[in-house]
Length: 156
Image (tube, rainbow, N blue to C red; front, side, top):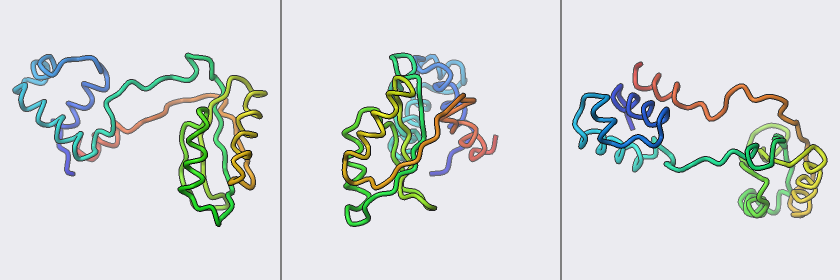
């Protein structure tokens, strides 16, 4: 879907103030409320806006350790079956099929470095993962940064 500057301005406004009403957004953007609503609906239905939900922060509820894990899997299981098994482990936050030396890349959360070992043991206990290699995040400078990309696509 092609996005324009108004689409980008709408997304930025709701990104900065998620609880803003459509009416308030229309006043700030100086466009009709129906225009803002129609554009939001269009961006949601086309997938430009992937979700409109609170994003829990694991650090805030006791999971301050984040690690990225390269996973090598049993090839005869298939990626989808492995992903389904990993989805049953709450600490596994993301799983991606990747190119390179490993088959999957997972982002996991843990209560501590020692707890990370428990999470990694749970990952390998699925019997679908042959080997894992992990790196612990020491500091996060930014994440989930897609708004600048949308604005660049819109011509801002």
